Image (cartoon, rainbow, N blue to C red; front, side, top):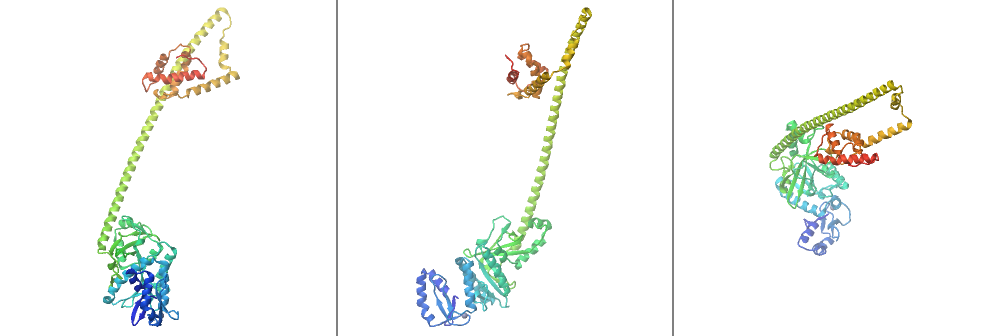
Length: 500
Ligand SMILES: [Zn+2]
């Protein structure tokens, strides 16, 4: 325990140490000063326990906090509570930060003690032993008691989380209303972001104040389309609002966040964090039996929130309309592209068919002329036969047409394969010639022998191609190149000499 009675006056040994420390003395100098001031009194058992009135002695260790203990080392509720409290702070809190916050809280609360007829005491001064001791206990004139804790410990440490939830339970079991203030370092907030994330200890520390209930009623009063949109609560809709208060003792500010918890960790912020002076946050309102934990004009904030939601809903509608418009446009574009593609395909098919027709017509006429010549030969032979009585070659000729030896068949297949290969050979500059390359390649191949034998000139070949409907995409002189390469390729494949 840090307080003992000396001649009816409370001596707080830790407080005395702090005063000397602020004056710039180091620990050993402070220790020497306190020894000089109180050692003799302590030895003469002049100090008494605040709680049980037993004589206590002053202990000034170099490493730990200064304290008093019963001479017989027995425990009363004060000594026991103090020991537990010191251990709690040492284990779970950030001592320096905690001490500063605690001092400010005490100063503000003590200012209200007299006018409000309330009693503010250190948690460890409580008259019976507590398994967890709060920072402060406030006793109201109507008998209601509050346990106040300032939380500075590790954010997501499981041991700490467990400890905070235990505190809540134990304070409640002892008849206290637990009220937690959290160090602002814990606050997870990004301006404009509508969500915050809580650690288990924050979830334990959150509670529903009278003002949170105002917000609950506000949400319930919102038009359905707005509340559904804002709170994303189409299913399992609940409107249970809670709040958390963070303290920044250095800035002397308190920050309140109002929440709609979505799951264990994530919560929807009902409005941006509300910043108020720490003095206001720690002002007790007797009518409400609450701290003044609300902003100057939260009704205005609610109206702003409604406007904000309206804006978001509108924005979303605009975006949806925009999306729909774009989708329709894209669909129209896709259809158009598909139509063009189909038209192109049809046109190309028509083109190919025309070409094929023309080609078959020309080969037909060739066949016809061949047939005519053949008939003429036959007639001539018949005449010879009639005149001379010698058998013509007619029967032999028909034999050649129908009969094919295995060797001949192999040769024919080889020839066909070669033809196939030649027709599908790609030459540089092919694209200068319009239409399917197979069409003009076939024509070139057909006339290759004539060119080889110099019965046809290169220029005549070009004229022939044009007559057969082949069009050029480029100047004619440029078309020479792919045609010549193709002729050379045929020569190479058929192992023939070619001069062009
Ligand atoms: Zn005692």
